[in-house]
Length: 184
Image 1 (spheres, rainbow, N blue to C red):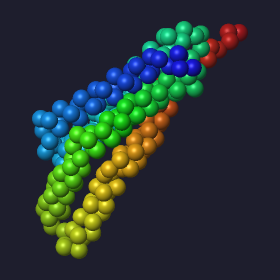
Image 2: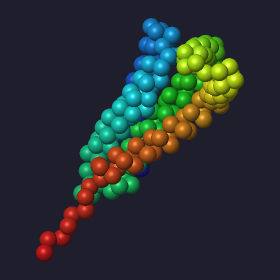
Image 3: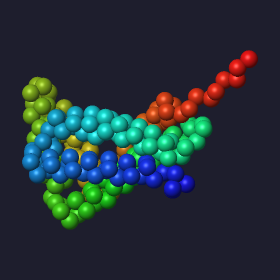
Protein backbone atom coordinates (compact mmCIF):
# COMPACT_ATOMS: atom_id res chain seq x y z
CA UNK A 1 0.00 0.00 0.00
CA UNK A 2 2.77 2.45 0.95
CA UNK A 3 4.52 1.70 -2.34
CA UNK A 4 1.41 2.71 -4.30
CA UNK A 5 1.14 5.95 -2.32
CA UNK A 6 4.77 7.04 -2.75
CA UNK A 7 3.84 9.73 -5.30
CA UNK A 8 1.21 11.17 -2.91
CA UNK A 9 3.68 11.07 -0.01
CA UNK A 10 6.33 12.85 -2.10
CA UNK A 11 3.87 15.54 -3.21
CA UNK A 12 2.68 15.94 0.40
CA UNK A 13 6.26 16.55 1.54
CA UNK A 14 6.73 19.13 -1.21
CA UNK A 15 3.47 20.84 -0.23
CA UNK A 16 4.48 20.85 3.46
CA UNK A 17 7.89 22.27 2.58
CA UNK A 18 6.38 25.03 0.42
CA UNK A 19 3.94 26.15 3.14
CA UNK A 20 6.78 26.13 5.66
CA UNK A 21 8.93 28.28 3.37
CA UNK A 22 6.03 30.71 2.88
CA UNK A 23 5.59 30.95 6.66
CA UNK A 24 9.32 31.49 7.25
CA UNK A 25 9.53 34.16 4.55
CA UNK A 26 6.64 36.09 6.09
CA UNK A 27 8.12 35.60 9.57
CA UNK A 28 11.51 36.92 8.43
CA UNK A 29 10.45 39.66 6.01
CA UNK A 30 7.03 40.89 7.18
CA UNK A 31 6.34 39.66 10.73
CA UNK A 32 3.65 42.32 11.30
CA UNK A 33 1.58 40.63 8.61
CA UNK A 34 0.69 37.76 10.99
CA UNK A 35 -1.65 39.94 13.02
CA UNK A 36 -3.35 41.42 9.98
CA UNK A 37 -6.47 40.71 8.00
CA UNK A 38 -4.33 40.27 4.89
CA UNK A 39 -2.55 37.28 6.49
CA UNK A 40 -5.92 35.76 7.37
CA UNK A 41 -6.99 36.08 3.73
CA UNK A 42 -3.61 34.81 2.45
CA UNK A 43 -3.75 31.84 4.78
CA UNK A 44 -7.36 31.07 3.90
CA UNK A 45 -7.12 31.37 0.14
CA UNK A 46 -3.56 30.27 -0.56
CA UNK A 47 -2.69 27.80 2.20
CA UNK A 48 -6.10 26.29 2.94
CA UNK A 49 -7.66 26.32 -0.53
CA UNK A 50 -5.50 26.93 -3.61
CA UNK A 51 -2.30 25.05 -2.68
CA UNK A 52 -4.06 22.02 -1.18
CA UNK A 53 -6.28 21.61 -4.22
CA UNK A 54 -3.35 21.87 -6.63
CA UNK A 55 -1.11 19.51 -4.67
CA UNK A 56 -3.89 17.02 -3.91
CA UNK A 57 -4.77 16.85 -7.60
CA UNK A 58 -1.11 16.37 -8.58
CA UNK A 59 -0.69 13.67 -5.92
CA UNK A 60 -3.86 11.90 -7.07
CA UNK A 61 -2.80 12.08 -10.72
CA UNK A 62 0.73 10.83 -10.04
CA UNK A 63 -0.52 8.03 -7.79
CA UNK A 64 -2.97 6.92 -10.47
CA UNK A 65 -0.19 6.92 -13.07
CA UNK A 66 2.07 4.84 -10.81
CA UNK A 67 -0.74 2.39 -10.01
CA UNK A 68 -1.20 1.71 -13.73
CA UNK A 69 -4.67 0.26 -13.21
CA UNK A 70 -7.60 -0.03 -15.58
CA UNK A 71 -10.08 1.43 -13.10
CA UNK A 72 -9.19 4.11 -10.53
CA UNK A 73 -11.85 3.89 -7.83
CA UNK A 74 -13.26 6.66 -5.67
CA UNK A 75 -11.54 5.12 -2.63
CA UNK A 76 -8.16 5.06 -4.36
CA UNK A 77 -8.51 8.66 -5.52
CA UNK A 78 -9.63 9.80 -2.05
CA UNK A 79 -6.76 7.92 -0.37
CA UNK A 80 -4.19 9.50 -2.69
CA UNK A 81 -5.57 13.04 -2.26
CA UNK A 82 -5.92 12.72 1.50
CA UNK A 83 -2.44 11.21 1.82
CA UNK A 84 -1.00 14.38 0.28
CA UNK A 85 -2.83 16.50 2.86
CA UNK A 86 -2.01 14.18 5.75
CA UNK A 87 1.71 14.15 4.99
CA UNK A 88 1.79 17.95 4.52
CA UNK A 89 -0.19 18.44 7.76
CA UNK A 90 2.12 16.18 9.78
CA UNK A 91 5.14 17.96 8.27
CA UNK A 92 3.58 21.30 9.22
CA UNK A 93 2.72 20.13 12.73
CA UNK A 94 6.26 18.90 13.32
CA UNK A 95 7.62 22.22 12.05
CA UNK A 96 5.15 24.15 14.24
CA UNK A 97 6.15 22.25 17.36
CA UNK A 98 9.83 22.94 16.67
CA UNK A 99 9.17 26.57 15.74
CA UNK A 100 6.93 27.42 18.68
CA UNK A 101 9.03 25.61 21.28
CA UNK A 102 12.62 26.15 20.10
CA UNK A 103 12.92 28.78 17.37
CA UNK A 104 10.51 31.51 18.50
CA UNK A 105 8.67 30.64 21.73
CA UNK A 106 7.28 34.19 22.02
CA UNK A 107 5.71 34.18 18.55
CA UNK A 108 2.19 33.31 19.77
CA UNK A 109 2.29 36.16 22.31
CA UNK A 110 3.42 38.71 19.69
CA UNK A 111 0.73 37.62 17.25
CA UNK A 112 -1.87 37.72 20.02
CA UNK A 113 -0.89 41.31 20.85
CA UNK A 114 -1.11 42.34 17.19
CA UNK A 115 -4.48 40.66 16.73
CA UNK A 116 -5.86 42.16 19.93
CA UNK A 117 -4.74 45.66 18.91
CA UNK A 118 -6.23 45.28 15.43
CA UNK A 119 -9.46 43.90 16.85
CA UNK A 120 -9.71 46.73 19.37
CA UNK A 121 -9.25 49.33 16.63
CA UNK A 122 -11.81 47.68 14.34
CA UNK A 123 -14.39 47.49 17.13
CA UNK A 124 -13.83 51.10 18.18
CA UNK A 125 -14.09 52.26 14.55
CA UNK A 126 -17.41 50.41 14.33
CA UNK A 127 -18.70 52.66 17.14
CA UNK A 128 -19.73 49.78 19.37
CA UNK A 129 -20.52 50.46 23.00
CA UNK A 130 -17.93 49.57 25.65
CA UNK A 131 -19.76 46.44 26.83
CA UNK A 132 -19.93 45.06 23.30
CA UNK A 133 -16.24 45.84 22.71
CA UNK A 134 -15.28 44.14 25.96
CA UNK A 135 -17.32 41.05 25.07
CA UNK A 136 -15.78 40.80 21.59
CA UNK A 137 -12.27 41.36 22.94
CA UNK A 138 -12.81 38.58 25.47
CA UNK A 139 -13.91 36.20 22.71
CA UNK A 140 -10.92 37.15 20.54
CA UNK A 141 -8.54 36.57 23.44
CA UNK A 142 -10.10 33.17 24.15
CA UNK A 143 -9.72 32.16 20.47
CA UNK A 144 -6.08 33.23 20.47
CA UNK A 145 -5.38 31.33 23.69
CA UNK A 146 -7.00 28.18 22.23
CA UNK A 147 -4.69 28.37 19.20
CA UNK A 148 -1.52 28.85 21.25
CA UNK A 149 1.02 26.23 22.23
CA UNK A 150 1.47 22.65 21.10
CA UNK A 151 -2.09 21.72 22.11
CA UNK A 152 -3.46 24.55 19.96
CA UNK A 153 -1.31 23.50 17.00
CA UNK A 154 -2.49 19.88 17.28
CA UNK A 155 -6.10 21.02 17.48
CA UNK A 156 -5.60 23.29 14.46
CA UNK A 157 -4.02 20.43 12.52
CA UNK A 158 -6.99 18.16 13.30
CA UNK A 159 -9.45 20.82 12.09
CA UNK A 160 -7.30 21.27 9.00
CA UNK A 161 -7.41 17.53 8.32
CA UNK A 162 -11.20 17.61 8.48
CA UNK A 163 -11.18 20.38 5.86
CA UNK A 164 -8.68 18.44 3.74
CA UNK A 165 -10.88 15.32 3.94
CA UNK A 166 -13.71 17.36 2.42
CA UNK A 167 -11.39 18.59 -0.35
CA UNK A 168 -10.11 15.03 -0.92
CA UNK A 169 -13.69 13.77 -1.20
CA UNK A 170 -14.46 16.38 -3.84
CA UNK A 171 -11.25 15.70 -5.74
CA UNK A 172 -11.96 11.96 -5.64
CA UNK A 173 -15.42 12.51 -7.13
CA UNK A 174 -13.89 14.38 -10.03
CA UNK A 175 -10.78 12.20 -10.41
CA UNK A 176 -12.17 8.68 -10.14
CA UNK A 177 -12.68 6.78 -13.35
CA UNK A 178 -16.20 6.55 -14.62
CA UNK A 179 -17.47 3.01 -14.86
CA UNK A 180 -17.70 1.96 -18.45
CA UNK A 181 -21.25 1.49 -19.66
CA UNK A 182 -21.92 -1.76 -21.47
CA UNK A 183 -22.86 -1.21 -25.10
CA UNK A 184 -26.04 -2.80 -26.31
